[in-house]
Length: 138
Image (tube, rainbow, N blue to C red; front, side):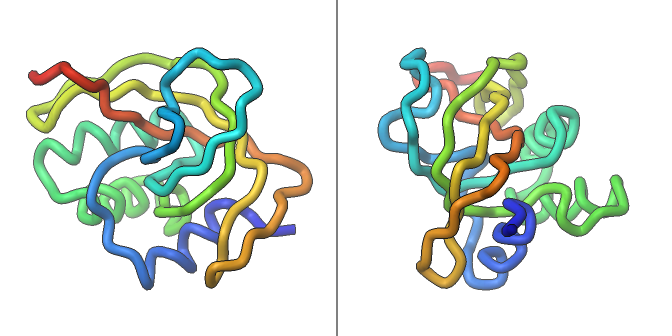
């Protein structure tokens, strides 16, 4: 069984983090239930970790923010970069920073990539991400 945060650590070595949250097609923040989406971005184990990540992005680059969150919770895999297939869950809230507004989402990870190969998550795993709110500047 592959864990999304383990996938994230593997991808982190090869990926540069350019923005918070999953960049997904179709957009991860629409209200279509049960639709499977594919996206690449930062996912965290808890909603507090992803909210803190977004807040720190106002002061740091995304990679620095992610490292800071992981150090603060003493878990190097709490937040990581990953490409995953997922379904959106609840909208947890919104965080506004100097870099924009972000919706905090619960997501269910169905599969992830490692070295370009897709692997199903069995069982699926609940994670959290942040998606930029389009059209809102702070």
